[in-house]
Length: 231
Image 1 (cartoon, rainbow, N blue to C red):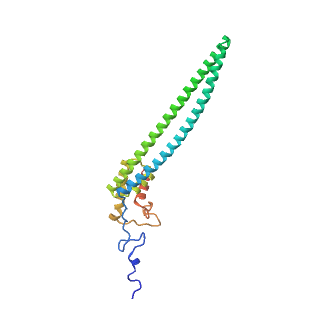
Image 2: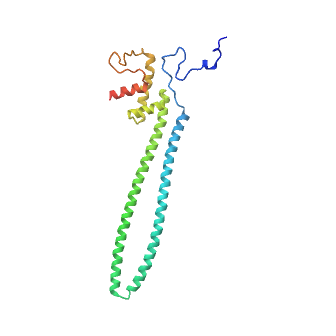
Image 3: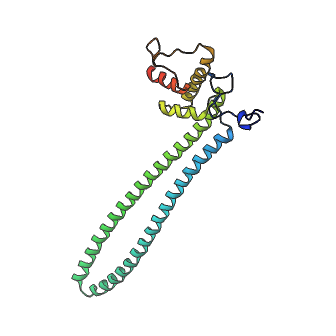
């Protein structure tokens, strides 16, 4: 009896091994389902949410410290107020002392008003910078989320792996849905080309026309190389 007959492992292919009779054919590109793409988007938004919570917690801690400082300042100001009242009561008995007291209090008030104005300006400027940063981050997150959705739709339209499409766009520094659509179209055409034309003959890694060999390169890599040369 043949000892190898009937073994389950004989009927299985090893990873990367093609079925008999199909060697040399272009492998089928894996396309991602809408649920998988939505999960990637959800994970990205969750990470941004955690970052936003960390910033909010830090801001809350700073606000608590600010309130503690204000309470201490209020206590000091109350002590100072009672001391000033006692000093004023004593100065009322002497016109010279009263005039000197009033002039000093006027100078102190001017200094306090100026400092308060500076503090208010500093706070308003910090709030403006914070609002600008938050707006920019929110806009960027919305744009990235929208692009993720559009990449999935474009990938489905041209039967191109959306992750491969995204990675190739990053390599080429492309950022818009219009560029993604043009790229997906070119990748799709490149994927179909080997089945419609004769295989390239490779001689020591260089074609007969002295062009770089495409052997071993994926369709996105071939297109990326071509795109860079055209630029």
